[in-house]
Length: 277
Image 1 (cartoon, rainbow, N blue to C red):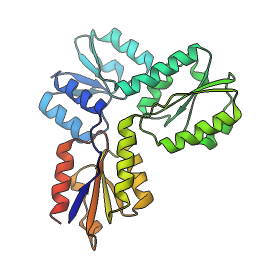
Image 2: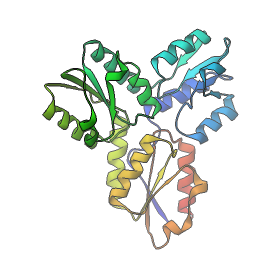
Image 3: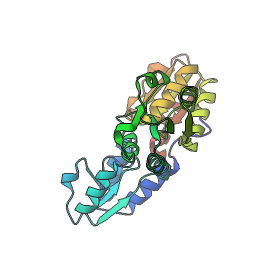
Image 4: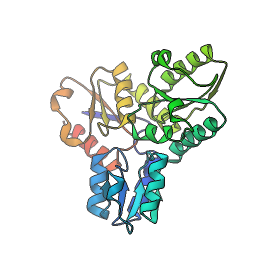
C-alpha cells in the first residue's frame, strides 16, 4: 500500500510547548487532561509520573499542578492558586488570546459571541472571562443566532481555536447584517488552518484517507469531517490497533493526516502498518 502524508499535520506549537513543560516537571499532575490524546497522556504518566486531577478538591498544598493546553475557567485558576503554591500554566498562547479578547471587550460593554462548542474545556475557559457570563453566548452555526438576545448593540466575537473558518465567516456575516457594530477577532490558529487545508487537498487525490487523533479532540474531528467532503473512505483512528485491513481492499493510495495532539511516534506506527498491507 502506498502512503502519502499531508503537507501539514500533527503536533501544533501549543501542544509541543505543553508536552515540553510536562516533561520538565516529573511527579506533577495536570488540571484536566493536558491534551486530547490518551496515548500521549499515558506516556507522560509512565515516563515522567505526570498524574491527572479532574477536580480542584484533589489538589494538595505541596502539589505541582500544570494547567492543560485548553486553559481552565478564571475562577478555577484563582482557586487552584489558593490550593497550591506551584501552578504551572501550560495554556496554549493562542487560547490565552481569546480569553483576553473577551475580558477586554466585555469590560468595554460589548456583548460577546463565541463560535465553538459550549461543552469544550477551551470554550468554558474563554467564556469565564466575560464580565457578565449571561451576556456571553456560544454558537456552532449561524442558525443559532436567531435565538440569542444580546444585551448591547455592540457585539464582539471570537472563535474556538480549532473550528472551521468557513463556518465562522458565515456567523460573522450574519452578525454584521443584523447588528450596529461588530468587532471580529480571528482566533482560529494558523496551525489549524494549515492542517485543514492540507487535509482537504490530500483527500482529493487519494483512494482512502486515515485521520489519526483522539476521538474527543475537536481539531481531529474537524479534519475527519473535511476529509469526508472529498473522500468517502475516510477513517478516524486513535492508534495502530484500530486499523482495519478491509478499508484498503482494491485501493492504491492512502492519505494520512493527524490532529494537533497526535505525537509523531503514533503517526509513524500507523504509516508503517499501512505500508505493510
